[in-house]
Length: 247
Image 1 (cartoon, rainbow, N blue to C red):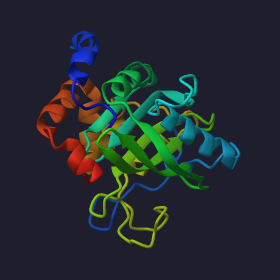
Image 2 (cartoon, helix red, strand yellow):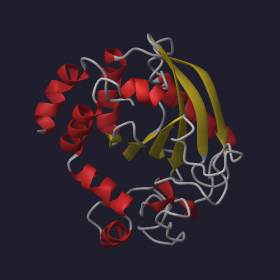
Image 3 (cartoon, rainbow, N blue to C red):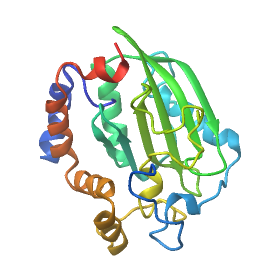
Image 4 (spheres, rainbow, N blue to C red):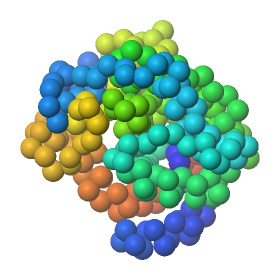
C-alpha cells in the first residue's frame, strides 16, 4: 500500500533508474538455532512499551500531521511484505525504505488517526490495527512487526482489513494468536537469529524456498525489487485503493 498511487512512478524515477501458514497452506518450519532460525525462536528482549512505540513510530512516517523525525528503529535488512490487493514486497532494506516512504507520502498524503498497537510475547512482537485517512476516505489495515534482539524491526507484514483479506481463519482471533494464521514472517529463515539478518543466497534460504512457494516468491522479488515492484504497480491498475481500502 505504501509504494503506489498516482504520480509515484514519476517521483521515484531517479531511484528506479539507478536501481535499473494456515492449515491448507505451507507449514512453518519449527524454530531452530543458528543463522537460519525462524523468527519464533526469539523472545522479547525489550519491554512491551518498546514494541508498541516502534509500531506507532512506523505509522508516524505515513502521517502528515506527525513529527517527521519520528522514525522507528529499522534493521539494516528490514523487509516489508504487503499481501494482495497490495503489491507484495514494497520495502527492501532500511536505506530504501527511508528513501522511498517519504516519497510515497508526498505522492499520496495521508494521516493515521486510528491506531491500536499491542505487544506480544511471541513473534511478531507488535501487531496493529490502524486506519489511514486519504482524501477519498479511510483505509483500514492490519499490520505486524517482527524484531531482532536489539529491538529493531526486521520484517513488516500488512493486510487490508477486509473480511476476505485478513490472515486469521478464525474471526474471533482478532490478534492472530491462534494456530490457523497465514503469515509469511514466521516462515522466512534468518529472522530468528539474534540480529534478524537474512541471507537470500544461503543454503537454508534456498531450502526454505524450495519447500514453500511463498518464501520462494519473496526471495525472487527481493533479488529484483524494483523490477517486480513496477510489474505489480502496473498490474494493480486504477482500482487498487478501492479494492484495498474497501471504498
